[in-house]
Image (cartoon, rainbow, N blue to C red; front, side, top):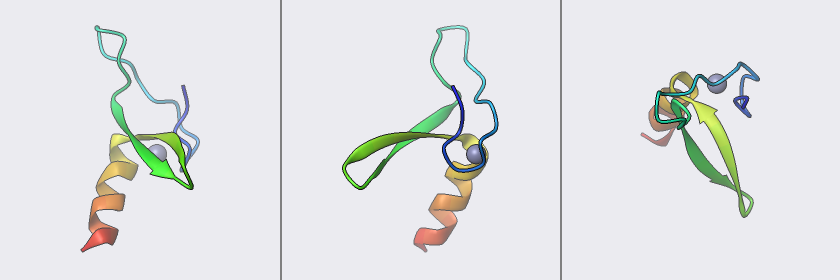
Length: 45
Ligand SMILES: [Zn+2]
């Protein structure tokens, strides 16, 4: 899986879950990595 913002590969945890988060963009879910997640939360402030 790839981050939909920076296109870097999103690592998976041992439970096969992506080390990132899903954000809702225009009605669909996008996977982003934890770094982009930080940026997203900074932008919201
Ligand atoms: Zn990213």
